[in-house]
Image 1 (cartoon, one colour):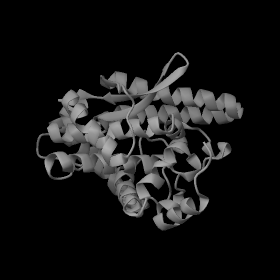
Image 2 (cartoon, rainbow, N blue to C red; image 1 turned 90 degrees about the vertical axis):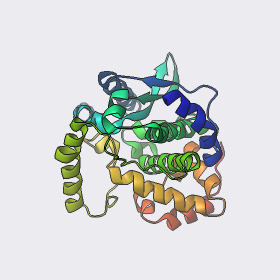
Image 3 (cartoon, rainbow, N blue to C red; image 1 turned 135 degrees about the vertical axis):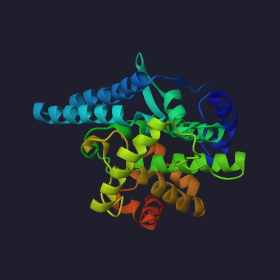
Image 4 (cartoon, rainbow, N blue to C red; image 1 turned 45 degrees about the vertical axis):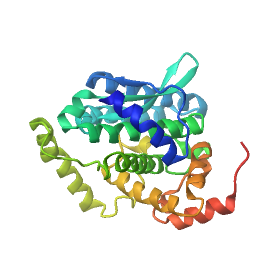
Length: 288
């Protein structure tokens, strides 16, 4: 089912986004343990790179290590909700994108053909983003202290929104209606229903009470104890991307982001897409 979804979705992903996929895309089916191990290995590698490049102090390094530990614990708790992720894996001196899929998580979520296609199209979009900028956007996702490197934009917001926008357009083409992220249908396992009831929904309610605007403060991975952005980021990001691609030439302007991190929307521009649009049009293309 996953192989069929990848073969069917890939040409639509390229056509909808205007981005090319690499000649070969690797999808790894993995266990819960393998998933957590691979995701955290990428984050630890990024932290080691930051320690060397930015000459982080022992105290700063320990603070980031402690946050990594908390993110790993969080990932162990919410693995059923995740289901899939695109990471960068190191092969000698070369980095390459890798799609991780957890059949166990998909089973617990009750995913069928439509939902699996949504997952696969979303991750293929992230591979295309990576390929367009030779991995620049992927490095931004795991960058510690990006502000010290001159990166002040919100990479997770725009990439997550772009992936969901693409995946829903793909599923609408294939099935006649877009597939949502919060699918139910009664196929979920009792364990997953219990997780949603006892952990996910209470967490969302707490967040709604403390921050009615889900993007009032941008989710920043290097300062976070959670392994992924809040669920709201994906939907708000999808709406932001939908607005951008609705502008004349919007898709081309958006696709400049993957190879130029200065064009990432700031936290303020996440809430004001017109401000971002005016800035990137005034700024013009930068030299490669």
